[in-house]
Image 1: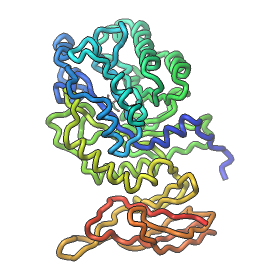
Image 2: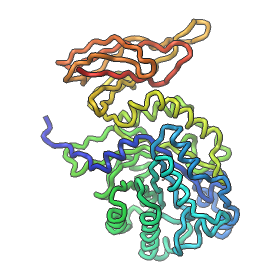
Image 3: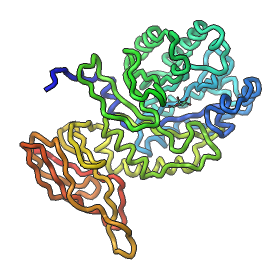
Image 4: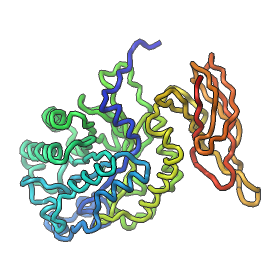
Length: 418
Ligand code: GLC
């Protein structure tokens, strides 16, 4: 046995983990161009030319409440909005820090205020993404200390003007890996102003899962599959989150046709929860703030699955139960076990359903302790046969295929314990 103990999560971190599934929203001036959020940099658009977009940024179809309603329909419990991205344009009223913000654009509104308000009306927790690098503010290159002061004050506005928030989600420190970003001061201010907000700082594609500063509450796995974290011997319990695009862009990509299917996204949602991580799925609204139809429909379809299996998703945690292949199990707050069964297809007449239905026994290890007295599919309530060797932690269930008319991609069975 390893004597090192695993720290318990602080209450606000445990609450964050229970949010489970969130919406990432990349939206800003770049959305008007429809070629991703890096367009200013990637397409070498001169600053003076790029800035002109602010006069066209009407945000005519941006609706914070509708966004929160969409998240709710998708089964998501939080939204992370890009309040300022690398292009330096702020969706919030910077209150004099910069004229490059939404109130000075054609929108003439504080869009972050609308977002935060919309979330609150719908019971969705608002989070703020904020860039740390800046392609617009010249101080970033010429006087880094002065820039850091600007960044600090900007974040202070976000921490003081929009009520209680779920967290701050930073991104961009990877642009100057050796610089002194004065994080103690920035994070210290957040702790003081928003004591229950989680602090995230994206470690990017190159350093997934890396723990940086000791104040960090959540490690990120950008576009990856999170691995379960071994927290033994850690000073503090840190949560995990995987953020992912539905296609190949964060910001609106007008000519991006490479969308992931709903089934793949559902498997990823489950895999994240299986590793104990939150899943943050991105949408990129168009320049006017409207959500592309396919993105909306994808989220709504995922939401239908969450409506059936949500009980297994939010409050559950990994518990050392292992299945074969992609199968795994999570434990609920009352001790119940949720078995996630993959590759189970619908069974029907051979003239209409192709391939094997995947029906049959599924074996798990690590199911020790109390004995299981009932096992049933969460969707239909149908009870399933099982065998349990509690002493050795071995558990086998018989997975019945779904009848034609159903195909859940990942199907969850709930085991109640004596
Ligand atoms: C990357 C990109 C950025 C995007 C972020 C989301 O760091 O620079 O455009 O916002 O990933 O995780």
